[in-house]
Length: 276
Image (cartoon, rainbow, N blue to C red; front, side, top):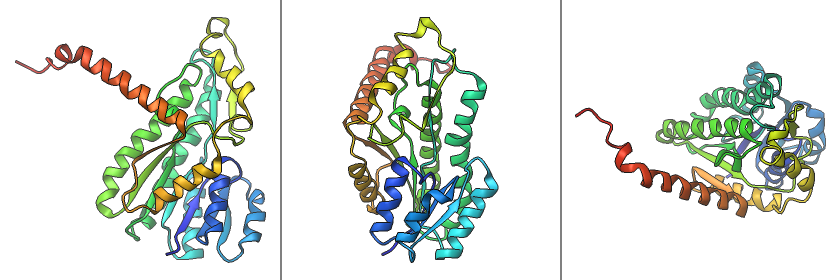
């Protein structure tokens, strides 16, 4: 059966690849971006099944309007994909509020407002999916990515709670945790802290080096990532967590092992904390 999708952040990156794949398989799609002109070619290629809509996720009224537009165009909504977001590299001390607050406005609060706008419509069709784009940065922290980590950790916690709330209603949440894929993310989608502190050169500073040396060279194939996402959305039993690529899986394995090591080492002392 055809599904109706609303995807945020379709002008570039995995959102762009996913929008095209959804349209190519014949599903109905409302593709959104801050500048909808970037999506006109897609709409012209699939005039019967694709609509485009302006959406700045930091403006709740635009999220409400986008959901209403999808409902009016296609009669409802089956899949919401919260893809809009960007990254920020810099040490915690280096980065200023005017650099990190906009990150949370988009990656966290924007996702929340789009989700809140879509839930009343999604609840009308049992069996729907909410796909939240996290990152390997949502699995484990890394020097130089602390604020980006924090925004994606927030997405992970929110998504886990939301899945528990909506699963009894027939909806499921999928947290997509991509490793490095060859998109424009390391270029146009990354902000770098203006201030640099020499003491952090060999820790946080290496994220700047990584960006400069890996943009356009990432090992991950976006088309293969999208194929996995589509399979998860179509599954009757989708995963809550979906790490994508070997780097993301290695990160998850290291995080689980380190977490287990700390728990086991301190268990006897740490559990003895209830009242006698």
